[in-house]
Length: 85
Image 1 (cartoon, rainbow, N blue to C red):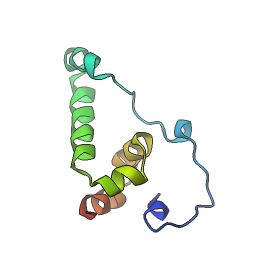
Image 2 (cartoon, rainbow, N blue to C red):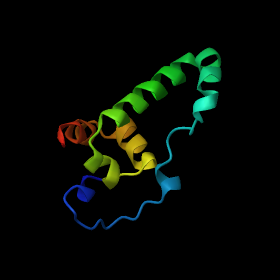
Image 3 (cartoon, helix red, strand yellow):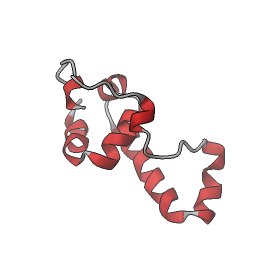
Image 4 (spheres, rainbow, N blue to C red):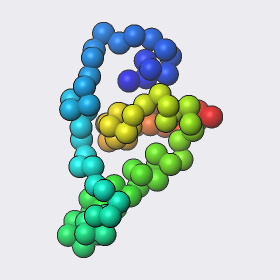
């Protein structure tokens, strides 16, 4: 998905459902996961913290589903996104 940063067109079209890798947990239900699935809760919280640390440019380029996919599967791009201001 780095093609988006370079403003290039991809030969692959991914829908959000293709990239869906985590459950979307409403903020009012996060505490439930803290007790029922603490490992998932901690991973989810770290992901949200990562997203908050990203620049507005990155947040405008990628939607949440894409960012989760990058967070889980593409460490190189994840690290590159952290350097963009």
